[in-house]
Length: 288
Ligand code: A3P
Image (cartoon, rainbow, N blue to C red; front, side, top):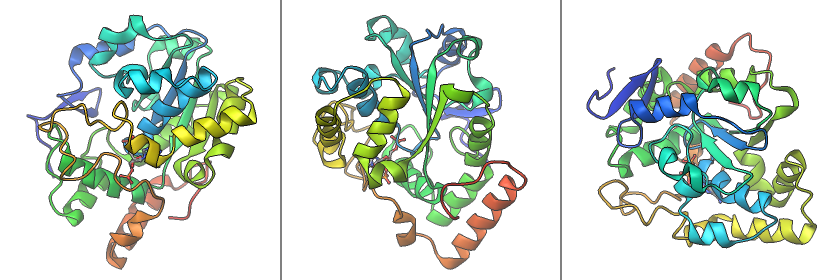
């Protein structure tokens, strides 16, 4: 199975969309100078990236809603590897928050020598695949996914942006960053957002009061984000994101895969993923 050379570029073995990434932006990321107080949220695509773009500024600034209501998410907490970082980097509030889909092995040297903290958000790969399938239908800068079954093959073969989910997980789960890294799951956030926010706040040393935690949770709910034009991608022209085909903030559920996978697909998916994670010292937070 091949991928569209017209839509994607290859960078050190990684596949990324040309619309949002360029060789220059990827090199800019490599030369990016991390500060010790920077905070980075890392995700495999469709694991909750824009959720973290909402959460991080609020946690870091004590619940001030100004940034989430005035700055589009991609400028507020930009992607390390995307084109817009060079344009907005000097405008970022301190402490800076960024997101990235890079695997650990592509992190710039300054990240490794800094004390910048990282939150790695994991999501059940079956739900990631479903979310990604719909995202490929609505995003004009991604290849048409074909049928759900065809897309499953692409996903399992890593013929999608940012490659195989298992490689991404392995790279970050084995990164040995000690107390610089915190692991959290989408499911944990979906089940009890205030509890997840307390963990994030403690990890970042923000000591938010319970009142602020509740306020942040309310503003980072799926409904609030759906209604926030600075976070729901409604400012993006339809040719790039067509929300009539599928809204970016689509369902916001854990377990939607059950509505999509046949039993044969479940067996195929589980056997490929389990095999690729065989012998790893970390365990998955969900059963496959
Ligand atoms: P679904 O397509 O399953 O609805 P990313 O930002 O990494 O691309 O991930 C997008 C996924 O995160 C989408 O999943 C989206 O709906 C979900 N998401 C974003 N904000 C959320 C929130 N506040 N609560 C629950 N899910 C959210």
